[in-house]
Image (cartoon, rainbow, N blue to C red; front, side, top):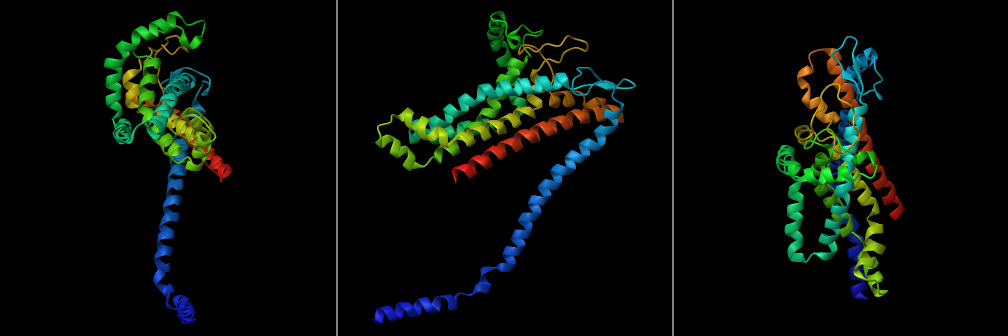
Length: 329
């Protein structure tokens, strides 16, 4: 009875001894205000960038004599100007989609190996090496791609174009080295660490109970992965792929070094083995032409399309992650 009485006294005294004023309510309000301000600042920056691009692009778009979305002409120096983004949009999307097609299977394989197959003594070194690939500067990838990779991929490209089976994307192009095919391979190497890191984290969070339950039912290693790990990480894989795609869409220096710029008036080719220019490389290659409001506005209009495209891809990735997370909860 004495022990029960003393315990009750302690329980009764504890709320009274708790100093609610020491919880730092003022500090919480300050921190909360700073956090909200930071979030609003990010939103304001995005809106400001979009408004800035639109403000400078509208005058050039109003004087444009070509269809901005469907024309392949790029003559902003004429009076009146004629410019369109069809070729730029095609090259940007084709190179990025091809890179994504190559990078996603490799990244998922790397993530599965590191989380379920590699012994612990190898997991950390391989993880460091994969993550370090993301820290290599773009210019290094570009120089390596055009000097070393392009000559070695030349025979592969020629064989694929000779055996194209009527597929337009594999038909012979007009250049040998600086092709979208080489650029896509380099982009795949650049975005693979991003996709692998994100996917690895998702796979590592698969509930252990699910995996043990599958093993208890007699599932093999691959069946455990197929029935528990991959379904659980589906949203993470999709989001990682979208984030990698956003990275590929905006790559500038490596693509500018690798891709062969077509001569003015050259016929358009939809093949992987043709040259071309992406939005980013077009703007970077012609920065010296920003000598008049009309020319500048044309390039800013192209940059605005790239901004919208990249923003939409990343927003889609976040939406998929959020929706799938709600379903899992």
